[in-house]
Amino acid sequence: MKMFLISENINTFTGMRLAGVEGVVVHEKDEVREALQRAVQDKDNAIILLTEKLGKDFPEIIADIRLNNQQPLLVEIPDRYGTGRRPDFITAYINEAIGVKL
Image (cartoon, rainbow, N blue to C red):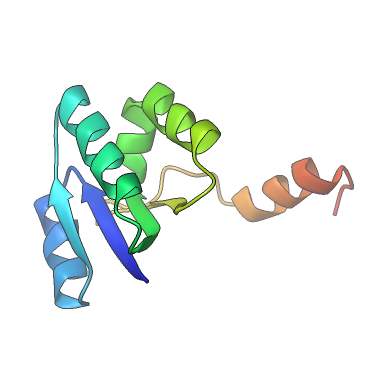
């Protein structure tokens, strides 16, 4: 099992390649959709890493992939510009998931 990166940023792609993670750099909506479909069809991919910017720019594509495929795991990661998430993201996520305020 392996990880696969889909990024809009060449620097993130280069850093992940140095760590041994293969991937592609995409910019357009059709490129993102095609890259995700190819990555999902490859049964060796256990985790697909996707930069947060692509997740924010193309949420309908990401939602479609998540709804229609149980595997692989699709994870949005920050790129070199940092995260777009609020500082208490994990706490808010847990509160929403279990319905208990921590």
